[in-house]
Amino acid sequence: MIEHYLEKNLLRQLFLCGQFYVNKEVDLPTTATLLHVCQTTLLNDIKSLSRELSDQIIYQSKEKETYSLYFAPTTSRFQLMQRLSRPSLFLKTCLLYLEDEPDYIQLTELEFVSVSKAYALKKQVLDYFQACDIAIEHHSPHFTDIERRLVLLNVSYRTGTLPDLSLPCSFDVQAQEFIQAVTKKSGRIYDRDTQEILQTGFLISLFYQKDAPLSIDQSFIDEIKKRPIYHFVLAAWEESPFKQFFQPNEFYFILILFNLCDYGFDSYEAIEEDFAQLHQVFIENNPETKQLIQRFEQHFDHPFLGNKAFERALIRILRSAWKNYQLFLPEKFHLLTDEQRELFEEVKRIVSDWSHALPYQLKINPNCLRSFVIELTGILRLDKQKLTVRIVTNSDIKYLIYREALEAVTTCDISVEPMIYKQLSKEALDFVAASSNRLLCERTLYTPVALSMEHVIPISVETVEQAIILLVKNSS
Image 1 (spheres, rainbow, N blue to C red):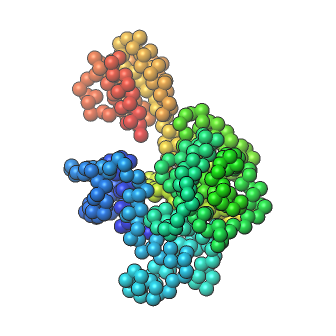
Image 2 (cartoon, rainbow, N blue to C red):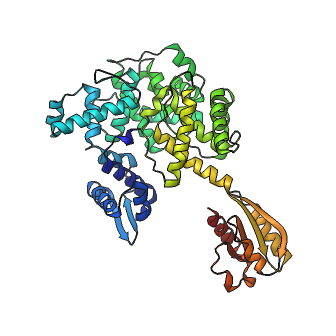
Image 3 (cartoon, helix red, strand yellow):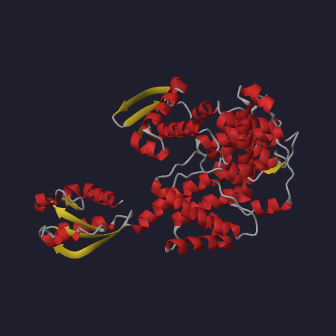
C-alpha cells in the first residue's frame, strides 16, 4: 500500500537494493522495463544507491547489459533499506502525524520545503491514511490504538527511527528467545527481516502500553482464537519470562504482529502440517473463501479448489487481511511484468467483486495482491503447459529410457506418443509446427535441417537431463 505514496526514485532504489542483496546482479534492460524507466535513469538510481551505501559495498561492476553489486555479508537487508528510506519526506511527514498533527510552518521549518511542497506532502499522507481505512475528519486523521501502532511500525521499520528510549535489562535477549520459542512451538521459521518487524513491534508495544493501553473486545478475541497462531503464541507466552515486560492486553497486539508476518519451513512435512491447519480454518470452515475460489474457477475456467499451491497462496493473503491490518504490513515491494499486470487487473476485479458482497468491509493490500499474482502466474503457466512429445530413435531401449525420463517431469504436463520414429522425416518435422509439440531426436539421427528448429531437441543417453531441461525451458 505504502509503495503508491513513496517517492518514485526511492521506490526504485529500494527495489534495486533488494535485487542486489538477493541476486547480486541485475539485467539492465529487463529491470528498466519492470521499473518503467530508461536505462540512463536506472543507472543513475544505481549510482545514487551506491553513493548512499558505499561503506557496505564490497564489489560492483558493469558489463554490457548486466550490473553486479555485492554487499558486505554481515549487513542485513533491512538496515540497507532503512538507510535509503530515512531521507524520505513522505515517511517523515507520516511520523509527524503520529506525534502531533503538523501545520505548514512545522513542515517548512523542519524539512526546509516550500509551502506548496508542505501542502502536497500533507495531502499525500492523508490520502495514504484514508487508503488504509483510517478515519479522516476535518482533514485530520483519527487513529484507533492499533492503527496508530501499525502505522508507526510500518514507517519506523523502514526508517529505523523509533524514539531512543532506555530498555529494561535483557529485553532484547528475551524478545529474541520469545520468537525462537514461537518457532519451536509452531515449526514456523521467521527470517531476519521478519524478526526485525516483530522486534520493532515489541518495542512499540512496550512504549505505548502505559500512555495508550489497548482495549480489546470479545469479538476480537473470539476470532483470533480460531487461528493456529493463537495457540502457538499463547503456549510460548505462558512459558516465557518475556511477558513480564507487558500489561496483559499487550499479548493481543503481539498476536497481531505474528498473524501479519510471513514465515517459512525447513521441511515438506512441516509445510503439509501447517497447510492442513490453515486449510481447515480458512477454507473448510469458511464458506466466504469457497465463494472466492468459485469466482476464480469461473473466471479462469480452471479447477482451483484442491490445488494446494493456489490455496496456500490465497490463504497467505486472507490470513493477514483480517481487520484490514494487512494494509499496514511492512514487506518488500513486488513489481510485475506486462503480462502479470494484465493478470493483476483481472484478479483485482475478482477480489473486489467478492469483497463487496461480504457483510463486512475488507481491503486487500495491493502489494500483497501483486505477490499473489506472481504466484498465480506460475500456477497457471504450469497448468497450461501441456506438451506432446515424439521420440526419434533407432533403439527401443533408448526410447524407454527417454520416455521414463519424460514421465518423471512434474513441472509441466507431458504426453509421450507411443510411436517410435526411426528417422527425422518430413512428417516428424511438420509435427513441431504446432506450438505445443516437441521432438526429441537421437543425436546420431539429427540432421542439419533441424538446427534452426528450436522445438527439435537432440538427445542421447549421456545428455538426457540437459535435453529435458531444454525441452521444459522452451515450453515456458
